Length: 498
Image (cartoon, rainbow, N blue to C red; front, side, top):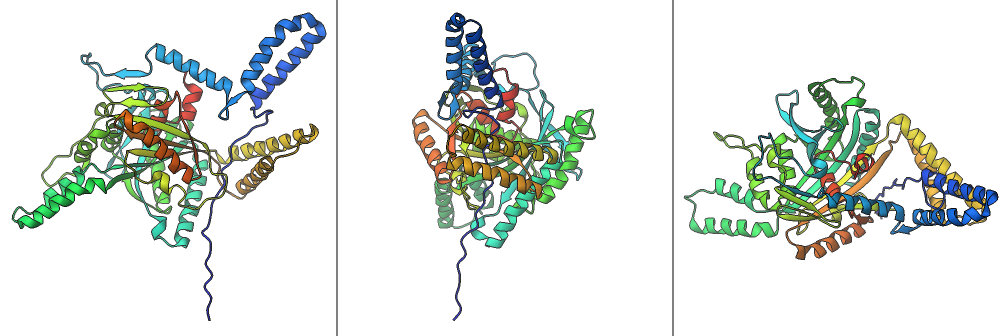
């Protein structure tokens, strides 16, 4: 009698919160500041004890603000973000309205972090054209690949394992491309407005068909929007031409360099369980931005982007038509044209190993338009070794510090130290190292739907072993991070004055 042994599904892991050398949960800079404050108190107490009454209170208050945390976030950082928001809102930087009458301008200006972006049209070298989003402030270029992922539920376990392994190898190869800044994978879902199906059926329906048949097709079209979904998967790759070894001098040379690099990335990506449909055209990029700002126009945009029939002219969307007529950022949401959006970022990745379909419920279509973006910022091969070695040293420092101060090591600290060593060993064996972020944006049509949409999204994230955190006072940046335009909130935080 033959026995069948059922194997448990394979799981995956490898996420670890980046932690530097620091005390009390602070980074290196915060630790130095605390030690410097203590040193000042000691020196003042030894030189003039009376002066300590004037120096100690400000330092103690400052130290308390720096050490106190709200929801895992330092109180000082929360106060700084609130002060920046007050500064921006008092000068109406959080509001955007298109002028009714304006001087000659080639396009409407985009709001907020999208303002320095421009849309270019480039040749792919094979007779086709694709869109490039240029950030005129820092010089980066973003190209977007349109893909269709294969479902792991309909594939064998060996195929799914192979796709995951190839995806890991694809991410590891990014560390050898010095010009590559980051990669954003976005799953854009929305209820099907019905226009695509209605137009297809209307074009194929024979006017001479029996009346009953035409009525049945009409009923199917009317019922389809409640059961259908519009799903679009994109891989946006951002390049920094200044970091390229060839050092292109002009925009045309930089675009040519991007095109040559994309050829290799496209062919390798096809082995990761996705079908690469091609590079998104400038009209498709503008359409994705347009539908994000104005979800009520999704049906109209789909009609414009539909393949032209014989004898019909191609319809194009320009960058001038992609932006909103009006937008206003609030602390907890972002209002724009026909929608109100809420954006989240993950505050913690899954602690345990997970299966390949862990994000299935989070990215699944719902009753509202939703975009889920995973952003990867790869380290170069040389930098990855230095970063992981510093992480191992930081974990050892925390363990030695707790031992010297007589404090017991917690189970989480012990696991974190073991995970840091394992990550360093995996990198030495050829694995890549990336900084990973996740952003989620949900758009509703009215204020009455906000609470329900937020609860559904957070519940879906919990089922995916992910803890989301609403991007309070940064809703516009979170909204832009899920668009195919190359916006990275982590980089914005380092360079934006407010």
